[in-house]
Length: 225
Image (cartoon, rainbow, N blue to C red):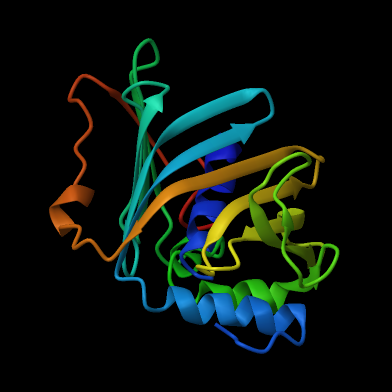
């Protein structure tokens, strides 16, 4: 179940992150953050790989903290975050709804899911270019070019040893996020077909899981923790 909090962290990081003069990795990262502050809403295709598990769907975001993923694979699975509560619906054969309140939590889920979340990343992680400020292939053999940043944790209290951000140089939008956990597991997210400021209505983020689903509360941690 901790995987879902890792996924939430990554998704929130996307929406919390153009300088014309690139001097340092920190400055470049901040310039990407400035670009994201103008995003009122966001929609894209998302692919998630965690271990040997692959998931695909559509992600929607509305500033400041409304987030939803409707999965195509696994079919009918949903992740929804309203700034206070993370909801995960797992369809048949599990048929379960997992609910976690993060309001006021020390886990920082609600605060990371805001444009100001980049401040937390820059405060808790050191930024460096993977090889340099010039665009390079997103992966070996690809013609798609990105700027690669490596974020390494400043404190042992952080949940990821490092985070790699692949940023499209033309749009200053995050194309891929890859994180290495404390147990050296890799979680990777790809974002394609990105559309900005389409006027996504707030109603899209209202999610009611099936009444037949079994409910499980505080599946990540207790509110008092």
